[in-house]
Image (cartoon, rainbow, N blue to C red; front, side, top):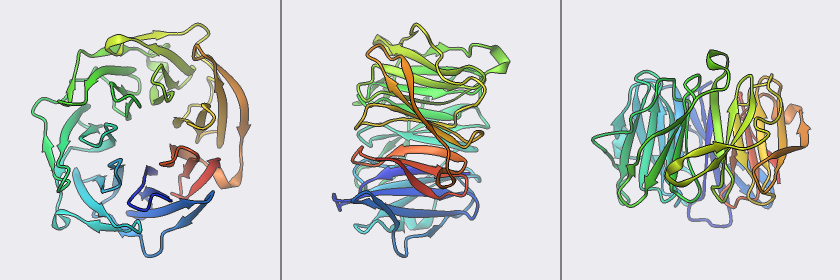
Length: 315
């Protein structure tokens, strides 16, 4: 298992991709420059326990690591992309069995999903020290197993995939960190379907949800994080569950990774959110893709495999 976080430290000519490797309990750093991806020398950092999630602040200052023992660790990022343990190497927070971390677009609020308690914790990030301050009342979730949390590019909605529990949607106030009234969508086929991955277009108009045994469901995002499924949804192949989704800012196309079929598919997005296949690729370099992400510039789509090796899937 691997998960990644694309952020850019002070060297604005490069983007850095950090990959948490659960195979050997490390974090590896990779630099993207001039269309090439390379390992940052002497950058591999040992994780105190099995990594389960990773998230970096947009300004490239801090990187947070969640581990299987329920601890969240702070790392500061040097100008060359290397990681340095923060807070004396001690945890800055604890969450039972954290499975996903997501941050608002300003890097002020951190959301941590738990597969054990099946809820989500919210923390305010200290901009100077990177310390985490727990928000007393985290968002209540519908029944399900949280697998992913996603903040829209306009920083106004937070969506949480709940596996067989569907998707929860919250309006978000970036100034106060407050999440508004929860909205909910259920899977199409009850216990036969599961919503495990999601993303939006760069304008935050449509939500794309990868639903096992259904395909890619598309919802128009309305006021208060309300969702309305568009005509023709779901799209794509229902049989092959997607593991990760991302919309490329350069082309505006949706990229869909499927670990089960060892493919990365590309879809064009119509003005109403409808999807049409552009390409479907399978290759050894993208073997069993588990995570997709954009680099900081938005020019490159990076695929991370089960072996925690990142590759440029599109540029």
